[in-house]
Length: 360
Length: 164
Image (cartoon, rainbow over all chains, first blue to last red; front, top):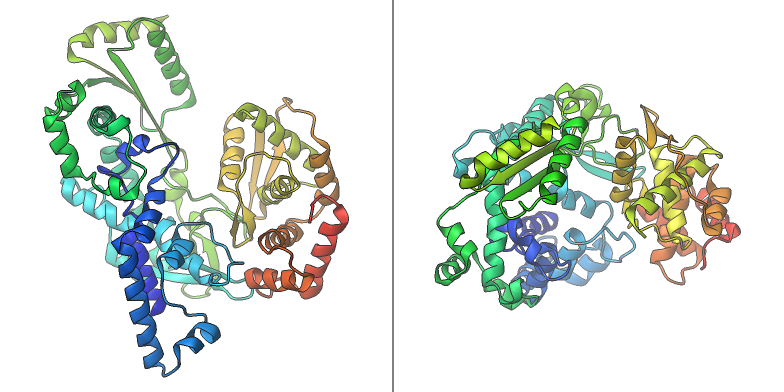
């Protein structure tokens, strides 16, 4: 009951610190701040903090009544404390600190992994939601089968507790990882979407005071998608206008989704040569470098690293999903895409130039 | 320190460990933790994982050096064994040499215990040895005996690498 409420709260709160338009505008945070820093401030310093304390206290009383023990005993004998913003942050926001009194090891590590592992419910959620709103099928997978395949790998001797899948769920997991892989290549890394991320940042620099999001959390919260669109409408800046009018540069070249070393080398030389000339204003380069998944092939027993365990349904034997899945082994190479954009009117000139560079 | 210089130092560290044992990724993870804690700043930030202190950035660096051909990684079910290919190495500091001389020939499992013990010592300020034993058991369960943990504490003390 207590863990379930913690998990629910973490799930609800883990992304509240995101800037408008999510990851796109993170470049505009003040020196090195991350969206997680705002999450911490939001759960600790805004009205949300009061709500969490209230929920935490109420649940604590309920548990004490249900089990007919005093709240003091609940804390001292069972280590079940009222949920507070600080406890949630210790579980989700920071590296696990097993030496902290309130930190329950390895249980809290397991709770956190629901949010940031290769099997996390954040991915399960955004893939389906983004597919739906973008009108594509790439991100769909068998959610029910995946959830019913979930289990926990437990080694009490060495205190390990990890989300795992039953052996019958390997294909559901493969489909899930592939869904993410397809969504990245087709949607998140789509040439026009990537371009508008860049343009959005330039437009935001025109409207944000000092070109950055405010550090103070209450000021920061005033900036939401609607506020930004509204400010862009009132702004005379070139980029805001281009953004609202959907004026895009066009992509004239791209590498394969898994560019080979030789492709990357020749792509870099094109970038360098063009940058040496005076074409900087009219040509834009974009590079994408991302792993399809972070699973490590043949991760040995007793070694840390990103892994999902499969529990054999007959023998209970534990192995790595990478051993069972040829498909996941096949996409360990990273995604690397390079693109060249230019204005419509310069298309021919720049294309010619690239061809010239390639021939020489 | 710039990245290149850092990579060179990492390669040199692995090369030196190779003179003591056949290092796998886990050996390197734990040795670099000890080196960082002994006061050599390589810029790797560690958290605690199920198998002791671990730094994802270090794993990334190893992968990168493998991609560049500076390292060879032999993937076996018993460990991902690492060997240095590059000749581009640097002179190691006294701190680094001392750590590797003291701990370089330990097994990966011993290093898991030693680094976890050091992690607990660092987290608990002015703790007695029995506090540390309890702390290690909180993380490791019954994987290591009290005697083994006591031995790890002694090893750390005797090495003289870590200010208490």
